[in-house]
Every structure is written in C-alpha cells, then in structure tokens.
Image (cartoon, rainbow, N blue to C red; front, side):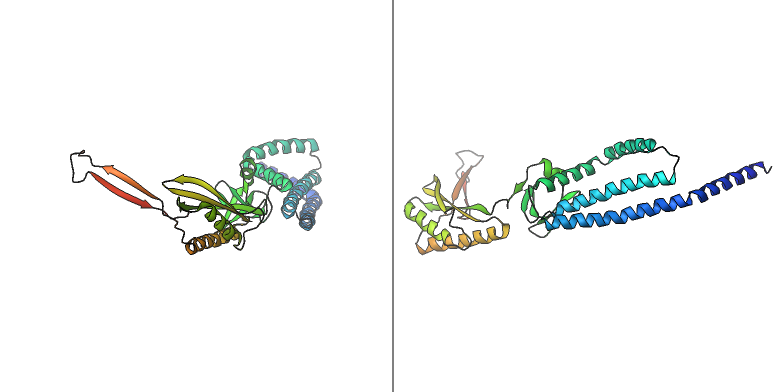
Length: 299
C-alpha cells in the first residue's frame, strides 16, 4: 500500500540531492549569463559610439545588436556546459544546428531584413537625412535599424519600409546630388515675339532667389498647337524638397509678373467637344452641344 509513496519519496530525495549538487553550477551559469549580458550592452554602446564618431551611426547600431546576440549565444553554450557537465558539447552543437534551421525557416523575413539592413549600412546608397522615394513613399531617412528604414514624410508622418524592399527594389535618392532640375511649362500666342519672350523668361528666372546660375536657366520651345507655343522653362535649385517648392513658387510669381509687365498674353488652353444628338441630323432642336474646358495657363 505504501510502496508507491516510498518510491516517490526516494525519487524526490534523489532529485533534491541533485539540485543541491547542481546549485553552484546553476549560480555560476546564471552569473556568467548576467555578466555577458551586461558586457554585451557595454560592447554594443562602445561600437555604436565609435561608429557614430566616424559618421556611421546606423552601422554601429546594427553591429552592436549582432555583437550582443553572438556573445549571448556563446554565454548560453558555456552556461549549459557548466550546469550539465555530462552533456556532450557535440550534442549541443547538433541541437543548435537543428534549432537554427527551424528558426531560419520560421523567421526568414526577419533575418532577410537584418541582412539587408547590414548590407545597406555598409554600402550606404543613402544616408540619414537623405530624401528618397521607394514603393510610392517619399520622405527623409531618419534611421536604418535592424528591421526597417524609418522615413519621415513631408506631411509629418513616419513610414517603416522593410530593409529587404529597399535592397531589392528601385529607390530614388532625391538628395544624392546637391542640385535638382525643375521645370515649368508656359504657353504663349504664336504671334508673340518668341526670341524676346525666351530672353525675358531666362533673365527673369535667373534672378529668382534660390535659382543657381550654373547650370544656366533654359527656355526651350517645346510644342506648337492651335496657334500657341509651349515654352518649357528649366532651372536648377537645391535638391531638398522644401527649397524646391519655395523656389518654384517664386519662379511662377516672377514669370507671371514679367509677362504681365510686357503685356504678354498667356492664353488658357481650350478644347471644344461636340456631342451629336441620337436623333440624327434631322433633329434641329438638340443637334449638337458644345462644352469648353479651361485649364490653368501653367502646366
């Protein structure tokens, strides 16, 4: 009747004795893991500080994370050997190999983003503060972390773009160069003195604040239609978004003022759409209707 209880008591006593014997090893393993965890944080901060001093803050952050992960993995292996001295290290490595494969399959996207982030901060196709366009999102790069690149849009929102997307899809870096070309299309009447108009717009735009003198302003006759000529005005300005839009606004005001001062007519494009009545040509009541559409003079 009491034999099972006696057997259970014997097992519990044996387990207790084993735990007592393993207590020093458990304490040593826990202290080792805690020390390595703290040391990994220190190492990560040192790497981040050195990288930031060399102008590579994002690379330092990623390398700090990887260093902590590697150190913690080594610490867990050593702690396992301390706590369970009878376990064969080869078995531990075999188990880790199986676990790494399982983790790689389960977290493929995360690992892919980490690797892509590391390659991005090493190759540096764009930097913090650059203004980029990727997958329809446009904004300023705030940071490249281990999973995504943080963009701040021009209207004050934050977008997290996975690093793998940035590495495998086309990215437009608007601020890769200091200057960016802008253009404005103006329509004038065919009777206008075109050489004089071109010279007027060139001088006017070149005098606008924010327009650089080299490369020089260009005014190119671009198209002719319905006794009207389209002039495309091109100028170069700061590649950043805010100076671009501010400069373009000043250019539009200056061109409009110069044209008005010279008595130059900037016509509205018009189009006539004729809709025939279903009753045929014999129906004179609603035989045709005309609709005129107008657009702003600046395309």
